[in-house]
Amino acid sequence: MPHHDLLIIGAGSGNTIIGPEHDHLDIAIAEPAEFGGTCMNRGCIPSKMLIYAADLALNAENARELGVNSSLSNVDWTGIQERIFGRIDPIAEAGLQYRKSLENVTVYRDKANFLSDKTLGISGNEVTADQIVISAGANPVVPEFKGLSDTPFHTSDSIMRITSLPKRLVIIGGGFIAIEMAHIFGAFGSEVIIILRGEEFLSEADCSIRERITEIYSDRFTVYFSEEIEHVSYNEEFVIELKKGGTLAADQLLIATGRAPNTEFLDPQKGGIECDNDGYVLTDEYLRTSSEGVWALGDVTNPLQLKHTANAEARVVAHNLLNSDNLIKIDRSVIPKAVFGNPQIATVGFTEDELLQKNIPYSKSIRSYSDTAFGWAMEDEQGFVKLLTDPSSQLLLGAHIIGYQASILIQQLVTAMSVSITVEELAKNQLYIHPALTEVVEQALLGFEE
Image (tube, rainbow, N blue to C red; front, top):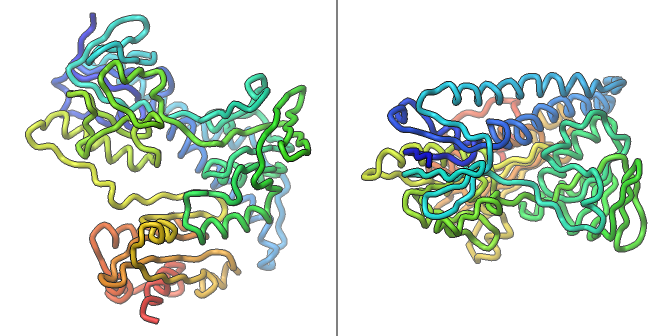
C-alpha cells in the first residue's frame, strides 16, 4: 500500500502549495485532468483572453458613436483559440511534467476518494498519507431538464473550445458565466438569447448593480425573464421548449446555472470529513477539516469560488502543514470579486440589500462615470461607483462599480477596507490624476460630505 507524508487532491491552487520548504516530504498529487485547474484551463484565464478580444470587437462596432466610422468585418475564431490555448495548454502540460520530474513527488492521474481515515482509493489502489489537502475544485451544475442529457449541450468547461462560432447561442442562466459568455459570443457576431429563472441578472449582486446590468443586457440581447425549461431536444439544432409556451431554436446551447463542489466522488464522510448541505467541505479558520491532518481549500470549500481566494488559502495551508505550533488564519474579511462582461462589474464588502437585512446603519454615495471628464471622453452614461459607509466611523462597508475597468478601480477601495482607511482620508490624503477615470472614485468619496 503506497504511503506518503502529504497527498494533495487536485492540481489547481493545491499544486501551488509545494515549495522548496517541502522538499523533505514524500508528496503525492491526485489529478485526473489538466494541471492548473479550472482557472487555467476552463475558467478565468481563457475567458478573459477571449473577453479582451471581444471588447475590441465591440469597440469597433460602437466607435461610430464617437465619430469613428469603423465596423467589425470578420472574426478569426480559430486564430483566437490558437492564440489562447496555444499559450495555456503548454503551460498546463509543463506543470504536469515538472511535478513528475521531482524525486519526492508522485503524480496519480486519476480521481481520489476516501475509503476511511487518511486512506484513499486511487486507480483501484489504496493510498495512505499522514496529511491530506483537499483542493478538488468545483464543476458545472447541470439541471435535470427533460431531454437535456440526450443533447450535446455545453457548459463553461467546453464552450470556449467549440470549433466554430454559433449563429445563434441560447444561454440558460443569469450569473457571471452567462454574463461573460453572452458578451464574448455577442461581440463576435452570434445572436445570443438568454433564459433566466429570475427577474434580474446576478441575483446576489447589489440592487443598483443588478438593475443596471439587467437594463444593459436586456437592451443588448434577447432575454427571457422568470422562465423555465419544459424540454430540450437536438436534431442538427437545439430546440428548447419553454414552460410559458414558445420554442427557441439554436445551433449551440450553454448551460450556465452555477457550479457545485467536487465532493460527490470524494466520499468525504468515509474519511470523517464534514460538509455543509450543499456539499462544501467545512473548515476552521486555519483551514483544518473535521478530520485531524486533513486540510481543505478553494472552490471545494467556498461558494464564492474565486481563484485569488483559493491562492490565499493555499499559502495558509502551505505554512500550516509545516508549522503545527504556529498556525496562521485565513482572512476572508475583505474579498473583492469581478465579472468581466461588458461593462465590467466589481464589488467588495456588503451590498445595500445585506445592510438593510441586517439592520446595519449606513450612508450611501453614488457617482456616475458621466460626472467625470474621462466619462465624457467615453460618452459613458451607464457606469457608476456606489459606496456604502458606516456613518459613525466613516469606514467603508461596501463598494460596487459597474463600467469600464471596474475591476481596476475597485482595488484602492479594497485597500481602504483592508487597512481601515476612512473615506475622508482616502479622498483627501492623496492626489487623483486629472482627468483620469479614478476621479469617479474620488467624487464618490467626497459625496459623503454633501
